[in-house]
Amino acid sequence: MRRSLPRAVQAPLLALAFSGLFLPNGQAQSKEPPDPLDGPPFTTVKAWAIADAKTGALLWGHREAEALEPASTTKIMTALIVVRQIAKDPKVADEKVTFSRRADETDGSSAEVKEGETLAVHELLYGLLLPSGNDAAVAFAEHFGSRFAPPADAPNEKDPLRRFVAEMNRVAAELQLHETHFENPNGLPATKHRSSARDLAMLAGVALRDSNFARTVSTQRHVGNASDPKGHSRPITWENTNHLLKIEGFDGVKTGTTRAAGTCLVASGHRGDDHLIVVVLGGSSSPDSRYPDTRNLFRWAWRHHKNQP
Image 1 (cartoon, helix red, strand yellow):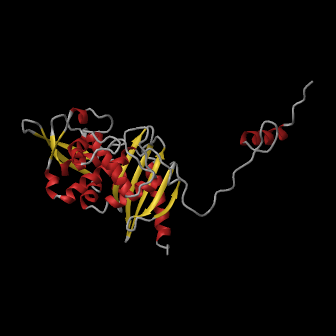
Image 2 (cartoon, one colour; image 1 turned 60 degrees about the horizontal axis):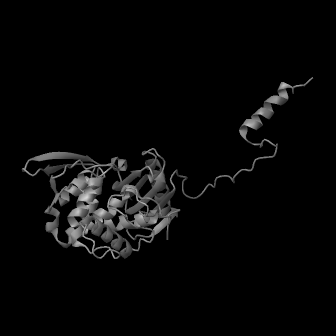
């Protein structure tokens, strides 16, 4: 006859079993060390970086040099190339960009511009950076690409989009973004399309020095006007995907989301005279999870940065 243990003995043993303190063979389960009481906050993202926007210096990071999929944070580079053209010749801002079928049929997030419609360059920057228009990135690449040299490995390349992407990679090399390589102007998944948290922090710092870029990424809502071939215009309302802009002190820069990349954010924030850039890459599938992670990193960094020598 099998005897059962007294209830007074059963209860503690069951509690230990369910708590995971013992393995099935009765051995004690090893545990990780206790959480440290100092250091940056824990986050849900794969990698992050914090940089001083004024100096470009990397201050802190976690897996910050790891090449990961950057999703639509790619469009920081796309926009930088466009605003550099405007800086060289201000008349470029008023050039008309006409949407091709390829631009109109681009997958993913959209500026909602149709084939044959045109917008001024300065207007389309909002369509690129606020709703994160993948189509706008293609339209910009087609519009400007012929002004740039072809890829080094394809000297006869005529496609303006490929020439534009080649320019993106040349600028990345110029800025010494060592973990960055672009395959397209919008960040849609591609095998070799990669960047790192520290590269994106450096890139954002450079881009924010341009007033056109800084003004655009700090805008929460903008109404643009697209004209069709017959000259009829229609308004398009673009809302910024960066929810941090609803909080005082945050003024950019760019979100990014794909299934492969997870949720990403390059954020610019001011606190007094302190200007920091925080980048988070590879967040969870919830698009809102990147915001508390980023805010926690900013809070920690603002407390510690002012005490840096």
